[in-house]
Amino acid sequence: MPAGTGILSGMQAETRNVWMRSANRGNGNNVANVNSTGNCNNNNAVNGYRVAPDRASDERKGWHAVQRTRNIGTRSLHPAGATREQGGGDGIVPRDGMPTSAPGYSPCVESVIGYDALWDSMMKCRCGVMWKGSAASFVLNGAESVSKLCDELHDGTYRPRPVSHFTVTSPKRREIVGISFRDRVYQRSLNDNAVYPVMSRSWIYDNYACQTGKGTDFARARLKCFYERFYREHGSDGWVLSADVKGYYPNMRHAAAEEMFERALPQWAFGMVFGVLRSQYPGDVGYNPGSQIVQIAGVSMLSGVDHHCKERLGCRHYGRYMDDFRVVHHDRAFLEDVRDELAVEVGKLGYELHPTKTRISRLSDRNRFLGFDFRLARSGKVVMTLAPESVKRMRRRTSGLWKLESMGARPPGTCDIAYESWRAHASKGDSRLLLERCDGWFADMKEETR
Image 1 (tube, rainbow, N blue to C red):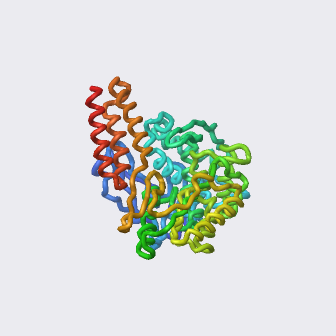
Image 2 (cartoon, one colour):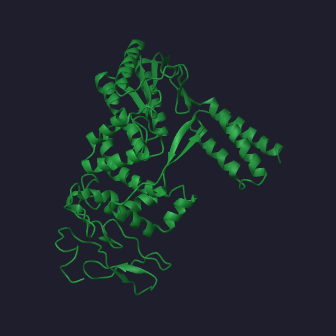
Image 3 (tube, helix red, strand yellow):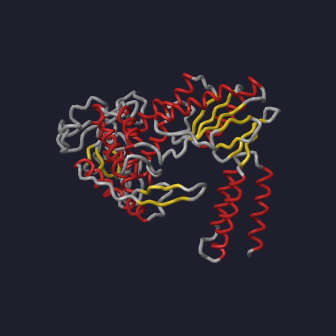
């Protein structure tokens, strides 16, 4: 390529690694980066007739011109700037031949459907599912598969494949939607690079589900923290409001979810989200779990209720995991008012509170949250014990696996892995005696059936 021409011409940022490659004289099977000074980098690449992986600052991957190099001093791993949603602008180079003047095109689109973004999404989606034939086939031919998906998304010929439906029965019966690995790669890129960074800006700290650095362990730790704070301020005599939305996903209105996304996202990102939702979920009411976009919708739908309780009602010890609320307070009458306000707020979204799961109980009574029972002792200790139903399910499942393993229908060690997985979960609570009894039962079960 002649000097001063091509995609590198006119660049203002310092170019550390360009797309050209050169052989390393020390090893013919390796390659080295050619720096802007013309010197070869002596660091060896991966052996085995492979090439060094392109980094986020590379200009090309295959035939796809994706991103310019990072501006020096941004302190960001993203090549375009400090954050993905702010770094679209001039930091993204359109793919060769892309109609950048076409209506609705935004350079930020490349952060979702560019080759680099789809490749990173594929590497995330492959974790834990390489035993599936569809995932293994896609990853095995990763360069070709991602390039084809990238071309379809740019050319407008991408069409989602039919979804599959199945039912899970534990811990309770749910209808799940399964999507192909190819579509999951695209939706993961859309979620991670466009939807989640924008939608999560307005979420409160005590909104726990489906977020980086949070989850069930974080939610249980926060509820335990609420109990401990309350004891230091008011003692052990207090109340906790438990509230749950009846039929959260099955009763979610499509118009409300689409309006929520349209209000928060830029137009190009909303168009992608709208296409995903409409292609997977026909009708006007009801979503099935199984898609990251739907999970973000579930986390965001009640965000207005969170702000109402925290800021207007003054609920200091308030937290929510998806549609499961917890509020700790010393005044029962105050919690009754909060319960009525919750009913009004969720009613505006087309929901109602679950009549049996919504209740006010003392902190000294057992209160179940995410598989564990919480109670506040008079000494101030927060006791968190595993729900008894979890032990029953474990014994039933482990016994069945051991029978299959004994007959040779399961690989050796399958039962042990399943039990150790459950045991690791149960050990998060105050369940030392329970674990000792379960260990004895597990050893006796294996000994009796040998």
